[in-house]
Image (cartoon, rainbow, N blue to C red):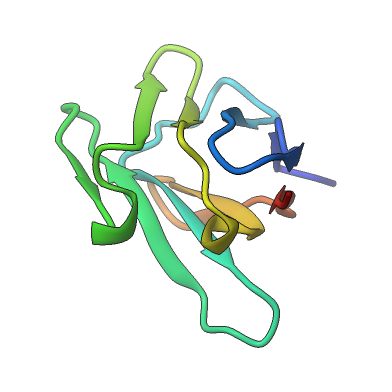
Length: 115
């Protein structure tokens, strides 16, 4: 069964915005760290943004000032607000939820930034 699902991807023009969301299929798990990764065709997967249970965040240099990660500890969800998108942001975005005994990965959602 699918444990984690991302949503919110799509096609936008440069300068546009998208908001990605990720949620676990159950509410009974205790999630620690949450993060977003992305992978462009033929490229290495890279960390985009991460957030701890306490709310401490870190971002890739390429997205600082444009992306914002947030979480809801009660619902075990994590969002990624992406503003001023650039063609270089194009790729498949994956969320990772750190559980008590294992990590949970989503299937990915496509983000395409093109004029």
